[in-house]
Every structure is written in structure tokens, then in C-alpha cells.
Image 1 (cartoon, each protein chain N blue to C red):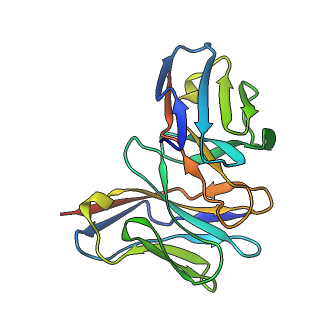
Image 2: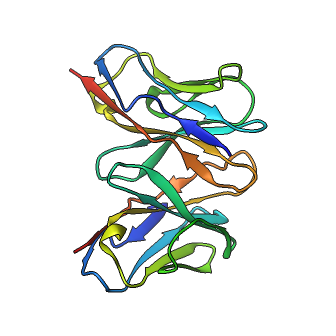
Length: 113
Length: 114
């Protein structure tokens, strides 16, 4: 079964510092991977995706993610965190057999001023 | 223009009642979904429809019945509501195939059963 894991419940970072939110996946074949962000009392917003091609993908709000096949990881990164980046971040994988979008358990990012 | 809209945003109701949540998308997507987000923020897929046809039906009680009158709408009807149904329900839509299969989500419906 296809799955993603987010090993950290919460990540704390100071404003201006780089941030990383971790995600590892378990899939058969080539994965379709996604990152979403959820602000309080809001729906999920799509940030970026990896389908094929360059391992470094760029997305909204200055976020990027690096697909690493050997480590089966798709970590979300940003060079300089903002307080407004504080939110809940979800990694997801599309199961190409069933078309399900399967989410990780989420990581709460807290950026301190 | 709201891409995926669901109504109502909040729903407070008593145990045993029947309620519906409506969802509409104007993105031209062929696939729509219902997700449930529990109090721990875990997201779990409930149903998926492609061109009005049910393609995913997770282990969800029969009290939950989705209805898709056309590919732009996917409504969720819940019978005999129970306390454990309290959660946030998200509607989403996407293309089923190709490179643009990212899902777009509605703002959620917070259901509270008392």
C-alpha cells in the first residue's frame, strides 16, 4: 500500500532561518507527491508537486521540495522562514492504482519572531 | 470566484438527525472527493467520484451517502447522526489523469453533533 510519513509532529524555527519539514514515502513505481498547507480554520492549499523531471520543485510562497529517490524522501524547504508560514503542513501521495490522495499525519510549523 | 465551495461552513445538530453538505466546483475537474478531518487533524478519504461515478468508497458507515448529480457537484448526506461524526468534512476536486492531478479543497464544513 502507498503511504507517506511525516516523522515530526511539530517543527519550530526562528524567523529568517531556513526551514525543513520532512516527508518520506512508500510507493510502488514512480510516485506523484504533493505538499499542502492548512491555515487555522481553513481548507488545504496546494503548495507544490513532484510528478517527473527535476528533483527540486518550486512552489507557492517561496517553498520548494526535493525529491530523493534513494532516500524515498520529499522534504519541504524554505530558505528564510516567515512568521506567516506558521501552519499545518501535509505531505501526500497519489496512489495511481486507486486514484486516492493519501495524506501524512501533518506537521505543525511554528515560526517564532 | 471560489474554485471549490461547500455549504454550510458550520453545522450543529442533534444526535439522530439527518443532514446534508453540498459541494460545487467550477474548475472543470472530472473527479471529486470527500475527506474527513478528525480532532487530531488526520485526513482520511471517504469517497471519490469520477464523472458522476463512484470510484472510491472507503470503509464508511452506510449512514453516509454521497450523491453526484453532475460532475461539478458532490453532496454528502448523513443519516442518524452520531456524536462520533463530529469532524471537519472537506470536499475536493481534481483531474483524474495527467500531470495536473493536484486536488483543490473547499473551506470545510465543521460538523458538531450534540
